[in-house]
Length: 125
Image (tube, rainbow, N blue to C red; front, side, top):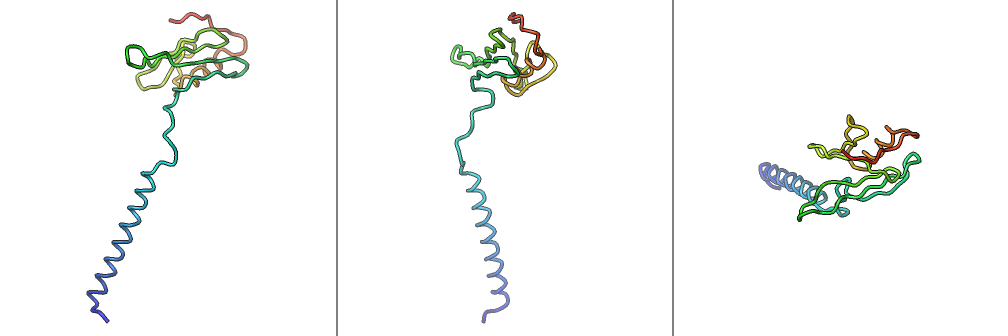
């Protein structure tokens, strides 16, 4: 039988080693992605019917080697003015007071604000 000091040292060593192994395993599990990272929100073109209205949107082409960050959005074929705010959210010319996370959400918000009878003028500020 060993001395109490060596027994205590061994227990401490085993507990420390086990704790380190658990933390390392947790770190490795988090570091290995299950799937490729998703595209940033709002970068995918869309074409859908929302509340009976056809909304389409596509990012504008890159200009001068830099992404413009702009979008061309139409509701029933008429252009919807869309602006990107400093915080990265979007607002439409129809609904100036609400911010939306994506261009699609902003287009849907514009349709909600227009209701079933009003149409866009097609003019963009």
